[in-house]
Amino acid sequence: MKRCRFHRINLAVAAFAFLSLPFSTNAQEMLTAQDLINIQIAAYRGNTEPGKQIIDFNFADLSGKFHTPITYRGDVLLLWMIGYINDTSVALAPDMDAMRLRHRDNPVTLLALDLWNGTHAQLTNFKTITQVGMPLLQNALSEEFPFAVDSSTMVVVDTEGIVQGIFGSED
Image (cartoon, one colour):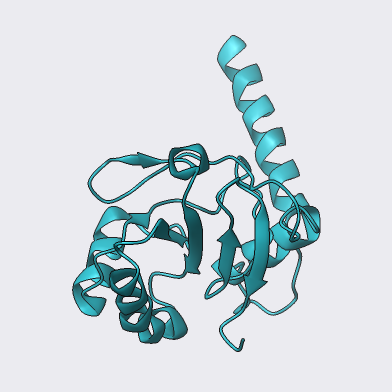
């Protein structure tokens, strides 16, 4: 009897979760990574505005090293939002890495945050294709890190952890 009750509860939770998703009459429409980003932007609008403290995060790179904004206090922190198979991210990667190399002797750090939550293998493939040397941080799209930006966006954070600017790929 307990097992039957447990299944009914799980079924009820699953049904609620399904009904909470955006509904479409087009069977081919699916919730994409971009849809999740747009939902996140709507839910957390304004939390990355210039003049505000950067949201604390703690993401691992491909080698397993964790990165947080406090680690880079004293450096200008450039947070480049990528999508591991986003054409714009792939195209911009060599230029971003060249910028990182030009400023390697300055207190400037460039981190790439994967907003498409690619697997380790997918991000490794991105790194292989683009030949970038910057840290690629995994699983950057999450409820714990409500960063209201889109992929191919650069967020500039000053030495005190204050967001100074947000720039899209067209800027």
